[in-house]
Structures are given as structure tokens and as C-alpha cells.
Length: 464
Image 1 (cartoon, rainbow, N blue to C red):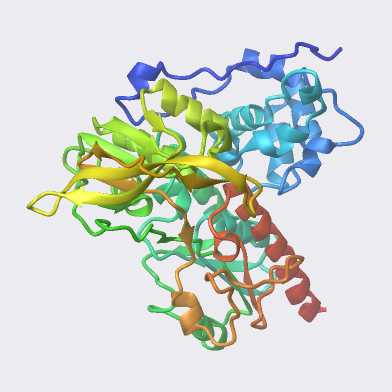
Image 2: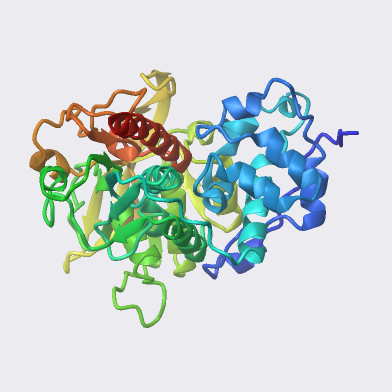
């Protein structure tokens, strides 16, 4: 009989006051007892609404059924048929708006904790399995993947499983893309990412770091001289946006991208870091997305008093509810309906305050959210010595400017056929943030899967 309890098992986590002082993982994961209890809440529905909500179409009832049977490795293998990064997805995917958002149990209570069960299964596999996956026989076809973030790794993994010889080119010195430079250690331990990448290497995927496509090599060269029959662009969206207000060029103003890269990739929070970061005492983080929450929580762990400045209300904030709650529990302050209009500096050119204007909500905009409008005469100064702009990102124009025949949107996103990921350039595919702008890890993975299937169809057709 299913467990008909209306609530899911809560996720064990570090005490808020303790975790606010360290970079260790906040969520501790389910115990086996908790996982078994949660798995029994699944009704194993005939119509798999949860699968419909999953961008990579994991057979969720099937893997959960194996958890109930204590076949954790079997559960992992079910997940792996659809996902190349189970331990990552179990930690950072917004399940509440995807698979869990479709769960029938959510109609009269809380949905099954699908993401928490996925994490449990992936962690169990990583702890107990020591043998590398068998490398498939080569089919003789070569594919280049640009970028080692979630879309690139997914595309590479899916193709490698079918025998393709895949080389991934990464601009930074460490593979993982946004998984290593953007998401903090306390949400996604980098050892988890390293293990996932090592698993792909065992399948035959080659990873070349410190290669900037458009500078070190071009896509034209990969196709004409490199011997590759197809190229997948998964280079992400790493170009930060700013407000273009007075004072953004002051010392102590960061983009969230730079701030998080220094923290996550360069370990700037460590006392002996080769790439240091300013340890502000009073930090304003401008924005309300997941990146803003990550930046705010990192700044807090560096010892700052942190204030998130967001121009709408808490009800409209786009970050995951879990991340907002964690930030609040840790002591981060939120100034809603507040928008910066200028940053003031001292005589040495360092930030000394941020001038904000209070807002009110007007009519809905194109996104469906009520548009914030300024309240006249409501400006005030907030003393700050560091400001982090977390306003979103767009694709770097380097690949577009060095690739012939590649069509892009006005804002920089690569134009693709949504059904295949094929760009305007023959044999060149793209997906993830390079196409959509900044989005979620799992949506990027879905795009990588789509492109891998299309590349396989194209190249295997040549072989017949």
C-alpha cells in the first residue's frame, strides 16, 4: 500500500547559524530510512505526469519503484538512461516547477520528493560503485562540443554512449562550466561535478581546457581542419548585464559572474587564495534570481552584512523558494520594492553608499508580473562598501563574430530549430543558455539531449 501521508520527508540540513559561517553543503541528504519512506508515497500513476514535467524525461515512477525495492543501483541505471548528471540534478533542479509540480500527490498535499530521491540514488551510486562504466565501441564519427556546462556535458555523454568520439572544449582551466564557476560549494560540492565528469571521460569523452573557441580555434577550423563532422555549441551565457547607472565603475562593484567565479572557481574565500576578493562589511546584492541568492549567501559567508535589493515584492521574486528561505534563515536582509538609481563613492573611488528609489507595482508586463513603477520623492541612501549586480547575463558575442553563417538574435542568443538544435550553419548545433539566455541547468541538459539525438540521426544516416 502507498504511504498516503500528505507531507514529504523534510530535507535534513545544517543549522542556519552554523552554515552561514562555512561553505559546506547546506542540505545533508536523505537517510536510507527517509528515502524508503518517501518513495512509498509515489502512487506509480499510469499516466506519468511527473515525466511530462521533466525536461530530460526521466522515467520517474520506475526509478522510485526500484528505491521501494531497495534496488538503488537499478534506480540509478534508470535515471542514467535519461540524465548524464543525476547527482547534480538532484541538488540544483527546480523540481517544484517541473516534475514535482506535475505530481498528483501535490493536489491534496505535498508532491513526492522526487529531487531528493534522485539525489539519494545518485549519492548511493557514487559511494558504492567503484568500477567505471564500460566504454562503448567507436562508431568512427567525431563530434566537437563547445563548453563543458550542463548542455555540453549532456550532449557529449549521450553521444559517447552511442560510440561517438567526442571532444569537449572548455575556455576555463577546469571543466564544468556554470556548475563549477557559478553555483556555490554549499549548494553543489565541486567533488560531485568532478565525479560526474570523470564518468563521462570513462565513456571516452575527451576534455580540452584552456581553449577559447573564437580565439584558440574557430568553429570553421574544427569542421574544415579538425576532422569533426558536427559541432555543438553549449558555451552558456557568461556576459553580465548592468544597470548603466552612475557609479557602476567604482571599486567594490562586481557583476555576480565575477564575484561567484572568484569564490567558486578560484576559492577566493580561502585565506591563501591566489585570486582574492573584497570582503565587504556591508554588501548590497541587486536582483532576485537564483544567482542573486548565491551571491548574497557567499558574501554572508565572507563575514558581510548582506542586503538583497529587489524592485518587486517577495511574491514575484524569481529565485527558487527554497533558496530564498535559506537566505532569510541565514540572516540576509531583503529590501523589496526598491531599485538602485546611483552608487556613491568616496575620495579613493570605493563604494560608500547606494542610492535607491522605492517602487510600487503597476500593470503586468510581458512576463506576466506586475511592472514596478517609481514612487516620486522616495529616494534614500543606504551605506554600503560593496555592490554585486545580479541582473542576468547574455551570450558572449565571440563565437558569433568568428563563425561564418551563424544567425543570432538581437540580444545575442543563437537561433536554432527547436526540434533539433540545428543552427543556420550546416552541421552546427546549439543549446542551453547560448540559445535561451540564462535559464536552468535541467533545461540546458534537455537542449543537449535534443541536439545529441539530432546529431546522431544526421551522422548515423551517413553511415548507412
